[in-house]
Length: 122
Image (cartoon, helix red, strand yellow):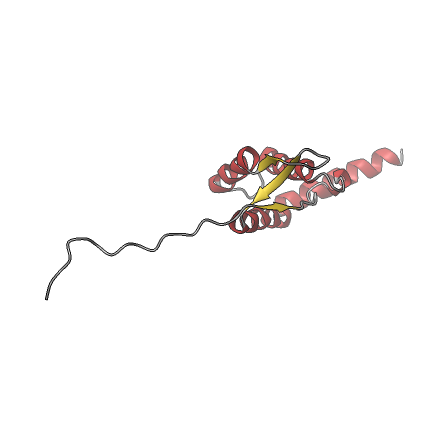
């Protein structure tokens, strides 16, 4: 039996296409702007990074990566678009969902809502 000196090629990962994404602002929905997906994305990411509830170091690095690499120039009225692969999009959605479900954020939102309503009624 003859053994080849060259190893079999490994399976290569096919690069995923980057697709434009429509982002709704879920963390502070009162600041949502319809059609302004970049503003909605940056608002949610900046809020998650500044509050840091239930965030791992990987989450922080990934969100910073999104801010630096996934906003691209486009021919839209906003002049930019959110462009992510399916894998990046799923990770972002999961990180944001975990952040929204964290007990620290729920308590923070309830406290701030209480302060807002008490200020408007006084």
